[in-house]
Length: 85
Image (cartoon, rainbow, N blue to C red; front, side, top):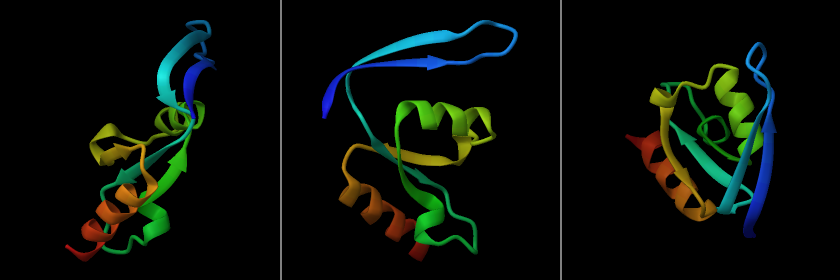
């Protein structure tokens, strides 16, 4: 479902950040670049903006992200292709 989402991100030492997203899906799919031992669940997962922000703050490097997808089947197709390369 698309619409207006309001996300508050805690940013220690810099105050909280309020972000308003319009027209953005409530959830989306992240596909990361695989390692030699990666499995589907390691590289393809559903998230929302708040969880994604926490993952980035926790160390998910944008260089590791292959793509962000609205459609689950497209994300899984891309992830399967990456795992077989």
